[in-house]
Length: 160
Image (cartoon, rainbow, N blue to C red; front, top):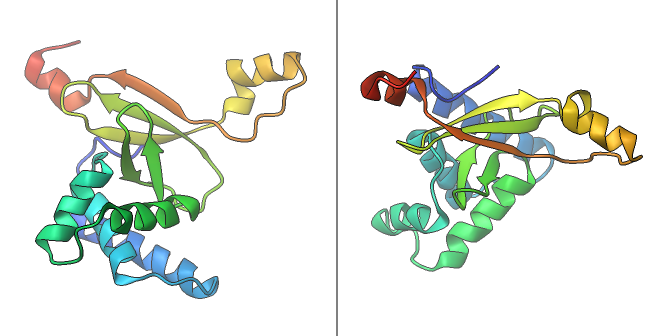
């Protein structure tokens, strides 16, 4: 399932994902601090990849601290535990659309509006998987980032 370009119930999305994170942290005896929760909420509210300093700006406006380590520590925790992905091409972060599912994310990044959709990929079954098998390599982790034009921008620009 691809998540990112379609219209959906935004509040339910935020509520569901924070509930998943909270339950996971409780089950694993981890601290889901107010800052960690807020960083996840910011990413869910934006529904696009945003940089650590943009997240820090949100936190500063809300009186939650002004030092970069505050944002980076929260992001590191959220990435480590599968709630957030880092989009290397944008040097930014996005909330995971499939937290705690065993998946290899494939990101489609709109070059016009920077919106991002996340899909699950299975690199071990495709061309990359075959290339790895051919040389005896075992893939442990992949991240696919594809750049193009999202449906909304394609409609506006008349791009086919």
